[in-house]
Picture (spheres, rainbow, N blue to C red):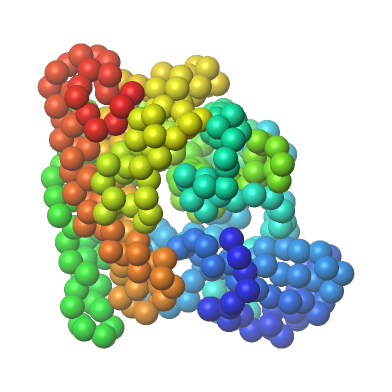
Length: 381
């Protein structure tokens, strides 16, 4: 997650003036660099005069297509609430909601120095045993998130909790409808409707097939590149990128973590080669069955009967997220190569979402009571 080139500059003098008044622990003058990895909120490394490092995350400039996106205020709230919990998060120092300071709201938090695997295949890891240990730790941390007493943590009003999938499907389909009508600044053409997205929505919004309510804190985007690992140990020292967090159903997070397993056979739906997630392709890479078993051991919750629904929901959501990135590219807001790659994935991912939805539908018709274990699917359990 390098931070050398500033693609979205910050008014340094204004920020230094504000820091002197509101965050005196940060010694000025400061140096600013921008992290280039990630597609959501612009993130910067601040190096203080005493060489202490901090992180600033801000809402992006320009037109925001969806009001539910880029909620740095929610992200700050949950990070602050979890500081004394067993969930490792960076310490927060200040939130500023005033657009007049550097253009959009922002917050400042602790810089965590560790390993971030930008690719879920973890090409840096050559030891199969370490690879397994890293995945085991990842599942352990996810169950720790879901075990948080959100009321005790001060997050009682952070989300409605019940009927999570019904509300989420409604939110995402409305977002997709708005994004479809965004016009490219250069060509004037609309982004367009995603293939089969209404078909997916129709199934996913059916209350008779939705998983039974189970309420927990949900990260909302739990994946390997949002974790900071210790430099030498297979241990997570911080969980990042909480802007999509809410009170909801833990299935959403578990399925999100394991989406690479269903992307692996469909290269056009992924930003890089995920063939390592094909069964037996990479030594030390656990199977979906093993990962689910670890989650059961840690949480006591066996979600395998609902897992096909979880895959369908998360690929549906992923397609709409890529459509959103395409909208930002069309508006001139997503200018890096990575954004353009994700933008081109949207239709392939929507096709995959429809495949996952059809598999979930077939599984429902079989009525096996064993979820994904009872059907012929693209993901080996």
